[in-house]
Length: 119
Image 1: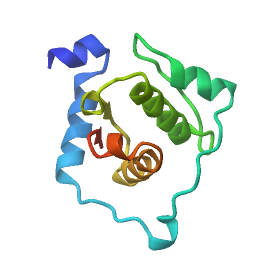
Image 2 (image 1 turned 120 degrees about the vertical axis):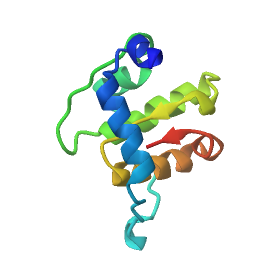
Image 3 (image 1 turned 45 degrees about the vertical axis):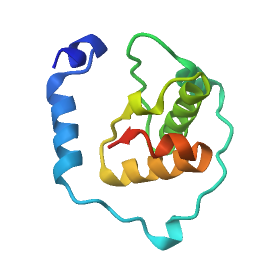
């Protein structure tokens, strides 16, 4: 897993996320929660994190601070810069979070969401 070393991601973390994505059942969203809301604008800290390029970026944030919103902004920015969505991998800590992230990205960039790996 040479790519893990180059990205600075620990092999064990990447392997666990990939195995979870492959082996855990998909979590279906509650129909009431499936409504796609327009995204809120990013605040200054979220915008800084979303625009970061280069070395791996560790963002530590608590519940309700807009982590998913920031990731959606980051993905939208990458796609707008011409990055091939098939080369984007977004790893989350749960299938539910992956589903929400996928829905939000699909609301902004439908063509990108279907080509990305979101787990």
